Image (cartoon, rainbow, N blue to C red; front, top):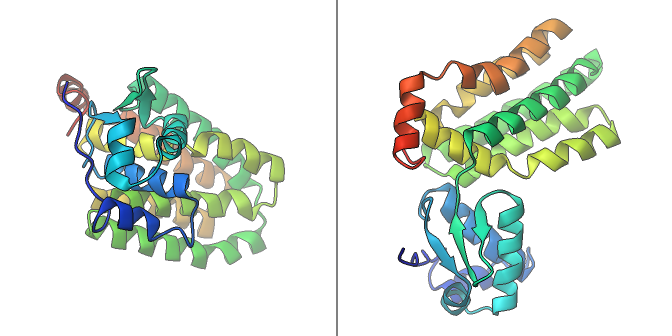
Length: 243
């Protein structure tokens, strides 16, 4: 398998990564640059990421790249080899189902506990998150859609002020990028459909009963996956999980 040539984030790799140092640590900048390329399929499933090559391309140390890769591994985006190269992966269907179910259980429980005042105060922020999602989708920016998705659901989780519940949520939230990339590849979803899949959750929070809120969140995380035609899933699997 050939090593994948790193797609430079902006300009030269050295300048592109270091340009964001005012806002991020160097390992985080490298991690974000690689994450964006993985999520946007510029680094597809199966691509090899060689530590020494990335360090040279980006003008950073191998230790910096190693730390960035550990973070990407924890997100489920790559598998790390002890021989100093990593492979871009796709979350398995079983793992994706588990993450979706865990998110449904936590988010539905939290959302149903929100007071009327909390839900009213939440609506405008949710609408803004959906606008951000639309903008990213129109630009074909998978990373931007993921960030908007994380923000949308994080608003719901954090509105309750339940700190321990939010901490539990964060344990499954780290893999949302891998989950969305796998789902789009497997189900042949369009990025531009992202907003439409979130609107029922916002609508239920705005005007629905507790039961309607739970049903909307269940449909968002569980039912939507269950209703994907089997032949579409099989075709994606036969193609190595790629669209």
